[in-house]
Image (cartoon, rainbow, N blue to C red; front, side, top):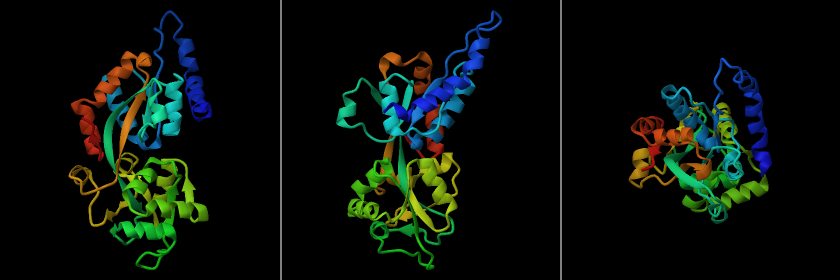
Length: 280
């Protein structure tokens, strides 16, 4: 499992080398090590915004948020003590719960059906999604071909859709076996594919669209506009929880301060303004 995070951690260590060497001179105090928060691509955009705001008020604490290593990579890196904070977008498995780690939820976000802006439709039904993945519905109303940009089966969004939309799990499995669609292994790659491919469709979430400034059109699902309000009142069914993962004994004062900031009024305001529901 180490291969998930070693190259990223090594890059950060190498890039930080010269500044540490300089800090050994009498004129400079030792430079504090950066706080590394790494994991699921779903969490990256909002974590970077939160880190940026936190660092303005705490300039002596540096937070590094590298590229995606996935929830699985975050769990491995935190378990091994390689990073301070893991970023996960799915629940821990029963086996993972036995590891000496704490999962601290900080936000919920609606998962949405996103399309390229060229798509004329403004809504879609659950049955449409099943038919698209089964290869039965292949064209939009204007006769342009539907281009599916999908994620791999362990993606947290796919897992939620499989649970919440009747028939989708079978349709997705069938599409995988038939190799109908391009499959992406990071959220950022999948999002870029939806945003840049005319007539494309895929799953993303409101938070990533906002924080990564994606040109993706969000469709109503079964007539319901996805958003915090429709999610909270139970009308909209698709969402995922985002959490920080850490080992209590490895949590520095800087990491504790950052977690407290995320839970503060200021942190909540950042989450809400980007389409997230803060955890209580």
